[in-house]
Length: 125
Image (cartoon, rainbow, N blue to C red; front, side, top):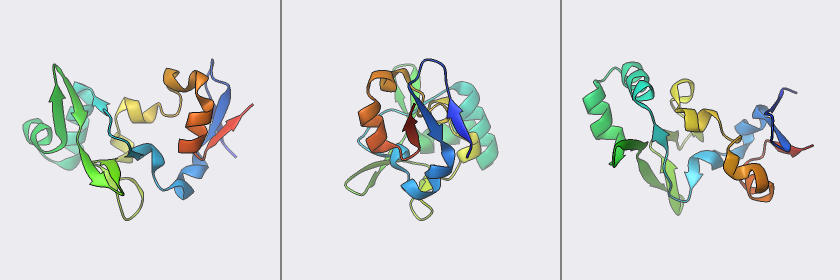
């Protein structure tokens, strides 16, 4: 078992549990999935489209920031890159930092109960 830990968090994460969860971290309530300029470039290159086309097809702009678009899914929403058949991220190796750092977000430091409902890979220690 390969458990990930991060200093300051009272839990660890078992990424092997992702396969059976069905993508709860990619679906649910509407929210923002922030993406940087470097991440936009990398994803556009991976998808073999221009950055302008990528922005037009996959991003919403909020002030000076960009967020991945969402799509309706199962009574809520899903990231535009959520694969509804495989129940996982279709651009996993190129996902934004916000996704890469989940579940180690400061928000969850004192909300472990909420995180446990969302993430099957969480284990308190």
